[in-house]
Length: 450
Image 1 (tube, one colour):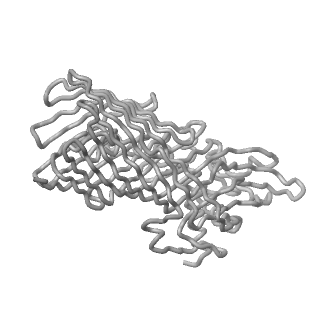
Image 2 (tube, helix red, strand yellow; image 1 turned 30 degrees about the vertical axis):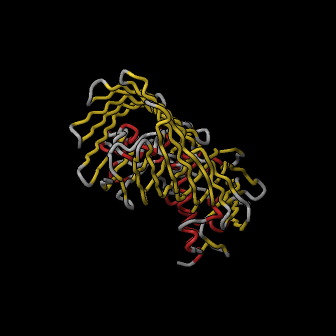
Image 3 (cartoon, one colour; image 1 turned 90 degrees about the vertical axis):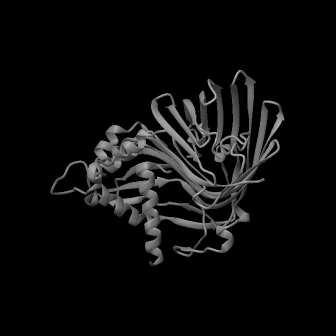
């Protein structure tokens, strides 16, 4: 593919992503929190000990996949059955500002072993996380077209988008400080691979009365770090260090937590996760759109009502705009380091063992990043069926405005272990209307140590 078409494809993807869904925050709102028998639950609180009594080893992909999405919009706001779309429906359904946060975590390696009163763990994973938001009036511009804006000078709306992909290497240790009180810590090394940040951009329109033109501008300065080179177009420039351990995009973070058993079967736990940042300094680029898009009066169009003259389908208007964007975008290679803070997560829970096999509890997971907090309050129960099967159920309240039921299950055989959990089982039954969705699943291999 020639370079100019390569950049067109990328700018089209970025533009549609920002204008329709705003991006993909998001550290994990993990449902494994409710299955302490899964060794990977320690990734939500490093003080949790390995309960399997064996060496647990997970291999690439099989040892765990996790994805999550949290939004104030659903897929069916824009698309209906058969994937027909309507920006009218999208505009009418959404709030004044649309936002979405999502992420994916794919395990490369995981191992956990308890020796005496200490649990040691190591994990390597690939993570992709992003967040974004945009004003509702930007959708109105797409819905209606440009004709009605001629003769005006106004700010249509603002938005932001950030995406990053990185590898995480972590080593954890949990130990019993005194009877009934466990603490844990997990330092992390982070190796950034891709980073893109629009910061805050503004979509503005103005009228050039002298030339009878409407000007549409996207005002903002964008930054990117990626294994690319730029000479009038972006081209792949990938070396082994870019994929494995890129020292120029180095970051650090840590997790810490404790578990306190206060007697009468009551247990309290608190953990702080992903306190840290990544500095991106490898193959960095600064980009902006210094000139507005100019539409002569006879080229203006409307997308609100089908008509013989002046009508342009919104999707076609977006495509043409994206094609033009590649010619307006200015790119400069830089040596500037961009520091990206990770979304910080705070977990807290209290539970009581009402019997040998039944636990009831209440938990709160809070994530904060870029003025887009997520708070999930959950009531949960955990049931054990013999030594092999563990089942969890929960009812979660998202940001005090939406309730969803969840389910988790763990099966441990002699040599293997399987687990699956979600905070919103209804999201998989009705995926197009789901605003919150997550899933964790995986398989571990178990080895005797005696």
